[in-house]
Image 1 (tube, helix red, strand yellow):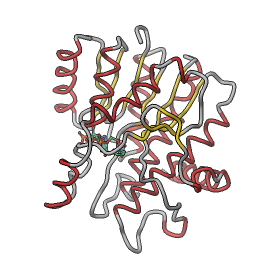
Image 2 (cartoon, helix red, strand yellow):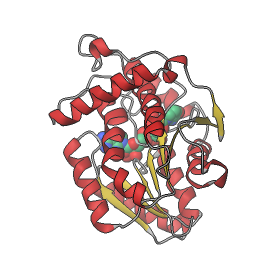
Image 3 (cartoon, protein in one colour):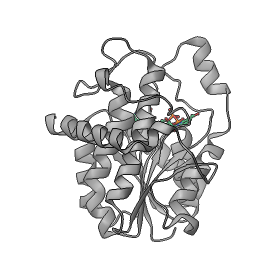
Image 4 (tube, protein in one colour):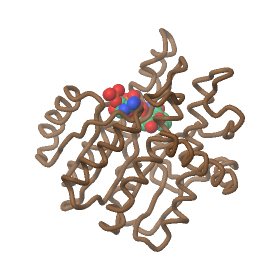
Length: 275
Ligand SMILES: NC(=O)c1ccc[n+]([C@@H]2O[C@H](COP(=O)([O-])OP(=O)(O)OC[C@H]3O[C@@H](n4cnc5c(N)ncnc54)[C@H](OP(=O)(O)O)[C@@H]3O)[C@@H](O)[C@H]2O)c1
């Protein structure tokens, strides 16, 4: 990965931090985003020390703000001429309904609309830098459907349903984007990291929070599929697929529905045009 520039969201914790570490150890230049400048600087120092790779930088970005994403992408392009790997890793699982800066339900905004916007803003530099790769971190919990009647769960909020919907949305987006990017030198795939002990349940109360922190594997294992997709020559020509444990897997029936994918894509564009 020497001479490769990798941008990864949400590397201040869990799977993202391990992904940044793994790719830094392979020699890549790592730029990661953090919504908290102090935390970002602290993690940057930690990553430089543990990997012995000095080419690690942090950019401020709150993924629950379109303005912040736009500023971050602008800053990235002003500092770097190339982008070889974009990893949309950051994600949330809220237990209470929250809204992003633009007033959009937070899980939908952070897990789905943020990667949609960020990828679109960086497509030009990804194409210019080709061959390049996009990795969208989804989840095995993507089953269900897209709740078009109430996509922001305004009537009745369920964190689990909103989370599952956001992850299905990412797979639908990835499959449709892969078709649009055919022949451009840019591939896009999804990674399911498996169940990992991370901070994903930070918003949960007591018992559920404990489950999130105690159940599952070390996030280092969860990061393996993202690292593989970012670096292995085995996958250089593969696009539009869903990976788990470094292998192509079948995703849910709904995730192959390209009519659903197109409907969601059009709605996503409307959201971005509004704010
Ligand atoms: N853990 C699992 O079992 C599991 C299973 C399947 C899929 N996943 C997916 O794996 C990805 C990584 O999650 P994780 O388990 O490693 O969780 P995590 O430890 O909670 O890490 C999430 C990362 O996302 C960042 N983030 C959240 N909201 C943000 C925002 N508004 N702006 C900027 N950054 C934001 C966090 O930043 P802060 O440090 O500032 O909070 C953190 O760096 C997520 O997409 C998740 O859905 C996880």
